[in-house]
Image (cartoon, rainbow, N blue to C red):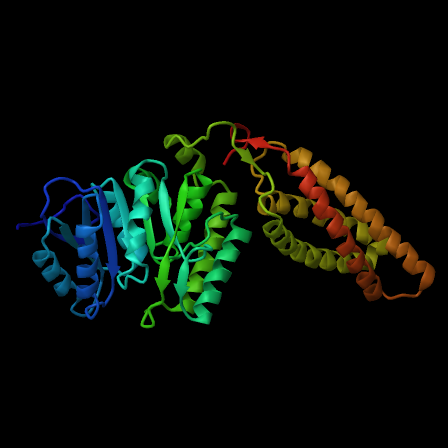
Length: 423
């Protein structure tokens, strides 16, 4: 056995390699670790045994030490020297922490056909590893993820973590239009050619790395295979749930803004990987009523607040009817644009003017309803204060909102093709 150094990886990664198989493996499994001296040995031996007895493809284990301050790195080196059985075992040391940083650095330089990662605690049962990798080796899928949230998954964990996990993935489905069910399960694989094209677009170096990768991959039209897993929570997990959740929300905001502004070249990625589809890909077709309703309500809350501020500001010099008309008109433009992009996923300048005109028509229905409500209020209570007027208008706007949602679904259901809608 001889130790070599890989030179074609980022400078912050110092890699020690024990080379036991001269040919490049089919599968390269990265195991990120931070201060795991107690569990690292048993977990790597267990993974090595599975690869030697159950995995039909050649495989390599890469232990990625994320700036550990205990004896993790020394133990990793001992494992790399001692484990045989035809497996290549590597140890990479990073001077900075971050799971995403380790995965990005090591996946990009890997010579394997498929790169994967799993948590060192092996919370996910290894029987799911072959089903995870097989769709990628065959070329059927581009990425594969283990999911704890499918019907056939079997999961044992506390109520708090279950609630946080399901809440986070619900947020992704409603705000980011995610079609995958479990973004944060530590059990994923990617075809290496896809990873080399996808990874430069990912900025996060921590726990949000997985979500960012999956959201961009989905927008680029990549095929993501979901594998149900058996998963047992590690009670000694070092994950700070609150800090991780906060970072995830910030990450969603950052990626959502980048996608909306067209700063992520997903269309170019789609074309470079040949994922244009077997026909025109439809953009903007409603993808589930529940998600649309949630996103529509979020936009509606912001629009209603803006309407109220504008109405009260304009009322003092324009009167109730004019204030209502102007406040509705201004917020209608914002509302149409926000629902077009955020609720129904229609982006680009093509048909934008037509959609705004249709939105104005829908606004006209709402204006008739709210103006009629004011007329009725003046008939019944001519001395009503402007705050009573506002309360009546808010109720009328809620009714108009339901009508607006139905109208938007009709407006934004017309297919728009990729070649017409810039990403």
